[in-house]
Structures are given as C-alpha cells and as structure tokens.
Image (cartoon, rainbow, N blue to C red; front, side):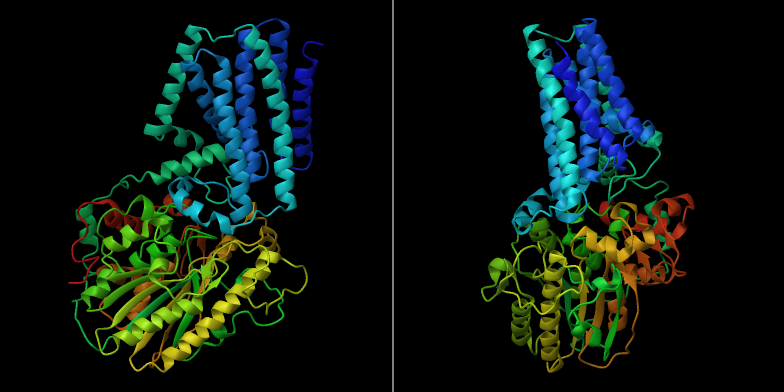
Length: 640
C-alpha cells in the first residue's frame, strides 16, 4: 500500500489525458510518454532507487508542465515524439535542470518552476479567453498598457474555456498530488542530488541555454517558423521561444546600405513646397471600427453602418488590410505614419515600445515641412504604448490626451467619438485663416470589453438568430460611431476651407470566437491564410469637401494608405512614398498574415523567403535601414 495513493493519482491524470485523446485534444503518443515515465518512476521506487526516481519525477513534471501549458494556450496537447515535441519538453526540462545544478535540495528544484508553470498556464487561459490568442513574445513589452485596460474586459466562460481549464487542472492535480507525497517521503530521507550529477546537469543546461540564446542552432533543428495566432503548429513553449528570437532583430543577409541607396535612386523625394492652398487634413484612426460582414453574412434589425456605406461623392474607399487583430492599436499608428509594415516584425511586437528611441522621419515631419501645424489626439491616458516619447520623437507640434480635454462624454469608461470630434471642430475653428492643420485623431470609444449591459448606449441593433452578447454590443457601439461620423462630415461639408479626411479602423474587435468561426466556417486554430486575412480587414475612405475623382473598392494594406492619400491629394511625396506606390502595384497587401499579389494570390512569408522574392527583400531592407541603421538613406525618407 506504500505506493497506492501516490500512483493512483498518476493513474487519474493519465485517465484525464486519455479522455482528452478520445475527443481529439491529445494524442496517444502523449499518453504513452506520460505512462512510461510514471512506470519508470514506480519501478525505481520499488527497487529503492530513490535518486533515479527523483530524476524521473523531474522529467514527469517537465512533461506535465508542457502538456498543461499546451492545453491552456492552445486547447489541446500538441506535443509528441517529433522535433518540435522534443524541443518543447526540453525547454521546460532545461529550467528544472538549471535549478538542479545549483540547488542541493530537490524540493526547491521541484516547486519554484512548477509554481511558475502553473501560473503561466492559468494566465494563458485568461488571456486567450479575452482576446482569442494566447500569450506571445511581444506581450512582455506591453504589460503596462495591458494592465491599464484590463478592467474593461470580462472573461468569456464558454465551453472551450471550461473544458480545457477543467481538464488541465484535473490532470495537473494528480501530478501535484504525487509530488507532494514524494516530497514528504524524500524530506524524511533528507534527499539531495549528488554533486557529480549536479555538475553534469549544470554543464548540459548551460550548453542548451547558450544554444538557445546566442545561436540559431535550435531553430535550424526545429525547422519551423513562429506562429502568431495559435501556437498549435509548434507547441506553446517552442513557439514562444521562436517569437522572442524574432523580436531580436538582426541585420538581414546581404544587406548593404550603399547598394540599397543605388537601387532606390529613381525614387527621389519632392521639394518641400509650402502653400496656403493645401487642404486641412484630418486622419481619423477609429478604434475597432470594422464591418464584420467581411467575415460572412448575418442579419441585423437595421443597417449597422449606414453613413459609411452611403459615402460616394468626393470619396475614395475600399478594404484596408491591417496587421493586428483585437488589440495593439499602436501598430496601426506605426504603419500609417511610417509606411513600414508590421509584417517585418510580428503582430505582437510593438515598435513604439521596443525600437523607437530617437527622432525618425514620418508623416508628421513631412506635414511640418509643408507648412502644416501638426496635432496628435487620443482621448485616453498618455501612459499607453510609450506615445508621449514617440510623438516627441516624431516632431508633433501639439499632443492632446484625455487629461488635456475637459469636454469629453463617455460610453463605459471610454470617450465618445462625438465628443472627440467636438474637440477637433474647436481646433479647426481656432485655426481658420492660419496655416493648414494636420490632425491625427486616434479614437477610443469602441475599445474592447464588450460584455454586460452598456447603460449609456442606445440599443438599435440586434442580431437575428443566435444571440452573441459581445458581437451585439459591439455592433451597437460601431453604429453609434457611424452616426457620429455622419454628423462630423456634415459639419466639414460646410467648413469654409478645404478639408480632407482619411478615415480607417485600426483593427477588428475581439468578439466571441464562436461568432468568427461560424461566419468564416473555419476553426481559429486551423484557418487558411486567405480566410485569416478576412479577420484583418477594416474599412477606409478618403473624403474631401471639394471635388476629387470618386473611386470604390480600392483595396490595400495600411502601410500604403498615407502614401496613397498624399498622391490623391496632390501633395509633395517622399522617395519612400513613391517606392511604396510602385510596390503597391505588385503587392497590394503586405501585413502580418502574409502577402497578396496583384493577381490575388495569397503568399506566406515562408514562401516569399523560399522564392527569394527580390522586391519583398528590398522592402524589408528599407525597413531595417529606417529602424536600425545609423546611416539612413539620403533624400529618401524626407522631403528635400
């Protein structure tokens, strides 16, 4: 009876794993691995091989931590006996090994990483319940911003969340029960790891971590790319490692600044000609503004976006492919202002926080060179996404955050679009007869967190058929945004000076996963690239209160929008903007999901790399030069 309680708990964990395998949430291989280690541990204890038993327990814990975190982050145990499976287990095991090598007491070695991995798994489940994607490498640098908005979100306790969390905790409970009982037994025996073994493990763990951090050997062995949506392809731990490696930007192969300068000679920047005839320009990046009908057809009680869909006169509009879904708003700001695609980095990397630490040429500096007064507005706290520093580096004349505006009204805790537009109107009225203004207005009304009753919101939109609370609330919010937009455009029609509006949504909202999967007909974890792109489409338009040529269905990715607007409005352009307009003809869409060429072929970055696509490589070299090279290209990013 000595081992019955201990190993009955392991059998219970194995039963949970087997049940997961029956419903397709784990593989038979994962069950076999867990069973073999448990049997080995039992046999070692029977033969009183306590040291061997304790080592096998460390291995069992590493495997269990791997399975648990896969389940919490992905919804299934994906680790098996293959390259990525081995690397996932080694990543967990290496942390245990590192502690074994420096600690004599095995109890300390066991509990520190185990508690950490349990907390990590629970955090993953919570994060995925909020935004549909688990933790990623870039989240480490976004923690402060995430904490400021966390209170607006409510967990989505759907069946997926209940199943994986319940199964994961039951599985882990059995393993931890074994560890506790073993701990009590080994403590009586004052169990310690032999010094020779600790030296060997120390050497192995140091070698492994040197390979991880200072070389690409592990990546070469694994032979896969980072997945920024589900982690399912690679397993949670290894995929997180791949993401973190991608964050550490290195100089591209065959990059030569002088050669790049030669290649771009034909793209010479225009003269910075100042003119009183330039129109005022209001760029509105509207929080989570999207037409969800791009995902699939659904019925509502009335039209959700009547103003947007009625725009025709003096309007150019189309679908805008952005690089983020459900959050990381600052990345859309970056793409619009620089013309650089976040696809060069990754969806969860935020250049504002990680890479922008000095003055850079951008749309604001271009407008200033043309005689514009430049303004950035955002009716939320100034502490998010390092904006205060970035917009100082970007040379903005005036910035307005929530604390600088005292006439805002609110829906939930977020300032309404209509009250934000009133602040824009005040600036325009004050500026009449002066130099033209360039205003970049980043709204916040439709920010995520769509559960519960919203008392301040008129409920005019209802979904036909199944009720999705988050989607329904979101549709009413964006309907209110559409109404406020209509009122603002009516004001601008009567404004005495020429005005151009560049309007776009920063990303789609993170509503119920079930709604998105129902609309697209695909699981979020197994979506082809062409379907995934639908989740990254928002509307955009360029509108003026004077005559321009109207166009419909001019689709593009966000990195092109500001260049296209400068071309449409007839303003002097930088060499970079001219290059982007040529690149647009060949590749109308470049974002974090992938690439769409002029023939509407969907191309992954891996395919582009394998084909050694010259133009995509050149574009990436340009972004590297802009972001990281001390000697940026001459007469290219700025006006003459």
